[in-house]
Amino acid sequence: MQYLLLIYGNEAGMESASKDDTYKMSAAYGAYTEAMQKAGVIRGGERLKPTSAATTVRVAGGKTKVLNGPYAETKEQLGGFYMIDVPDLDAALSWAARCPGANYGTIEVRPVWPMM
Image (cartoon, rainbow, N blue to C red; front, side):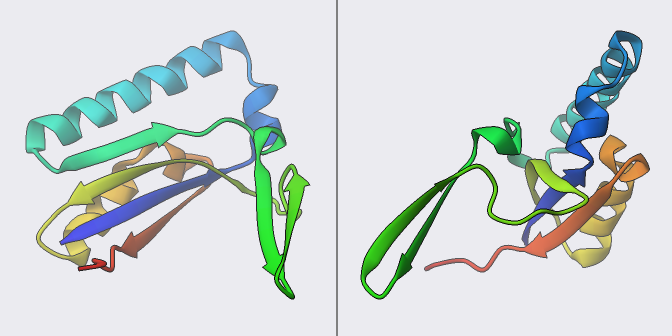
């Protein structure tokens, strides 16, 4: 079954992190990604640009509204994701707990609802 691991964290904290802390986090994610590759569970994943680069689209009353930046103010922002394919929710939760971002933010585990 496929699950999306959504990585939420404090964007401002990440942007103000020291070079050493940034290097350590990058190395931790590299090791985590490599472990997923070796286990054969990773199907995809990417880091996202900051919310300041986001554009939000809404359609209301048949009219499209485009807003620059994030739509909602939150304590944690979506910073990236992994798509994994594992036997069950317990396995997905185990991988989520191992994600470096779980030490600094939140990992939301969502089952993928196949479109076909």
